[in-house]
Image (cartoon, rainbow, N blue to C red; front, side):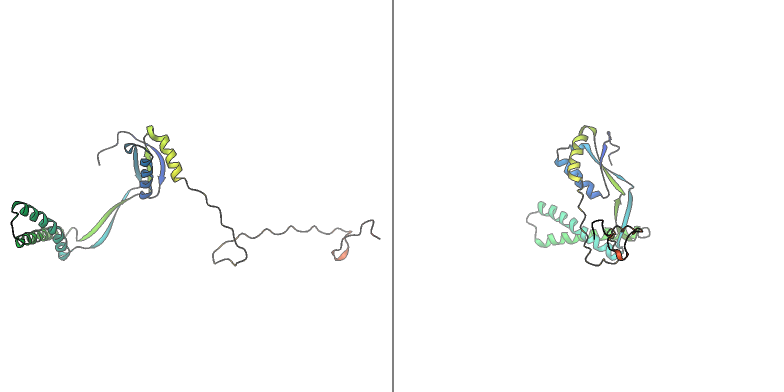
Length: 201
């Protein structure tokens, strides 16, 4: 919003979501990294507009009434400060005037813009990935902090219970087959009994 940054930092981490990048920035600031040295760089940014409802005269009047309450409170505060001895009925009358003005302005605005926009929406800016960058003067300390905070620990594989039947779609590696016995030679006796040795009577 304020123009291009004067200095470009080096990437120390890459995240798939913006909240994850925000958490890393919080950890860096807690580790005494200057906030001015840190930046979040989004890649593949796109604008997503989520439609929240249909806008009509009734919805415009409700929205104007809510804004009119705030306007009436402001008018009432100014009026009460100017005339502290004013009756409560006068205070309520100023509130109603503020609500009426808010509703009128909202309805007039909708009447002028309804051909171009007749719905309410919320706009978000999303990205494919987010980089956390730090200026060179703090890069080494930042990498140490992110390395201690973000480095994932590899979980040990769970043992497979071969006594229970596998679920549908589950793959279980078969146990290794026993080694085959050697083929009997020409002097091997029939029936698979071992050949008698020289000391056998």
